[in-house]
Image 1: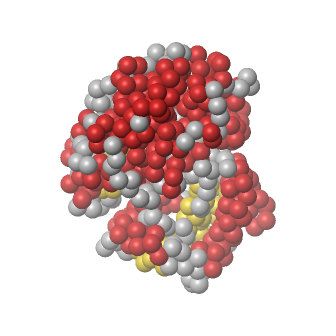
Image 2: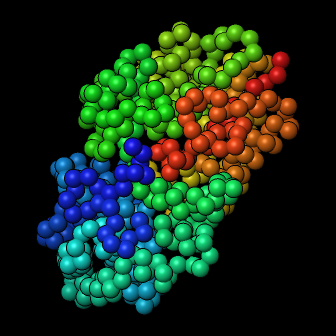
Image 3: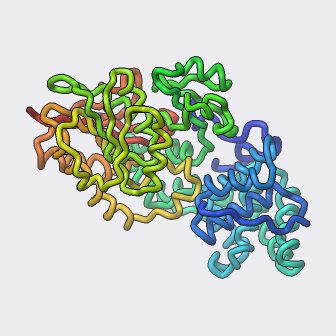
Length: 478
């Protein structure tokens, strides 16, 4: 079962799939307003505040707050749904709030806006009753701001609750198909257009792609090759074996860091799409023997390097991993542990490594548009301007890999983005300039269906239940 098939919150009681008419850190905020008496919504509000005030990452702030406040089980699941869901839905929520308030969003005080976003999310995108959604939000506002502002929150939320999500979409969404779908599934229009462009002749799938991107994803684990099988890992964790990677296991939720196989280093959290990227590198046909020199040129935070290292260990091969940031390099070291992986804290564009690698992975820094479902606030932070600088970096890293790979060796270029300027355009230009032989990457992913027209492969959340990973395999002629 894919992430797009498991919308909604299992076991959270009052939250989950959308109610009728629905379309669908950087630090820890200290708890305030305990007198409001609702620790779950306080946590969710404080996550929204950290994201808004300090550009914090919701997936880092929330776990820390849950631990600090000793919130677990169903309450933690509900807090997660509210915090992540509101972060994902920001564009839709803000449009409804502005309509209900009769003023632009930037004229509403930020702390009050956090409460409104939390309330409107409950009204339009959960099964929480309207009375509970309004009353708990008003209580939060009253505890922090007093009676006057709580009355404003009450008025805005009551107006928001007069219509279903579908009715608000009909009233507020742009009229063009891409703009309407973007609004309905809470994506910036430019990202929705990028998805449509990447889907090409199958652009009719845009609604499905955006809906899957807007759903709560499953947790994916990777079983360490040579240590534990996916079947054994699924039995130990109560999970389900993956569809595409022989090492993948799906979990419906919970904190994977508490699982014994993860604590013991037998497994790790890794999207199945990322597993397939690493596997494609090991499966690509070389000209000449594999001498066991593999390179991960953009290794941080270390998930793919760890999988490559585990596979390399089986054949007594060696992996070099490059990461320019010392902090991220340390994450790579922790991920790879006792595996045959040497970490180099250098810039991949000028690594100083000796050429002659048999296999090189260039998992290039990118916009991350393919992993938005796992990074709730990311879609509202990225802009089209980000693409230009990243494309330059991607080209430079690929050129550096070309100098390091031996004749007959292979490079897999990958991004966690389907955006054409970062994917097909980069690869096409590189092949024209270098004479690289582009292999059919689909052949490197046996059993994985619906990968596009080739020769590159494109994964999608709505088709595969993975992040939208792009990968292209290139061989250097002898």
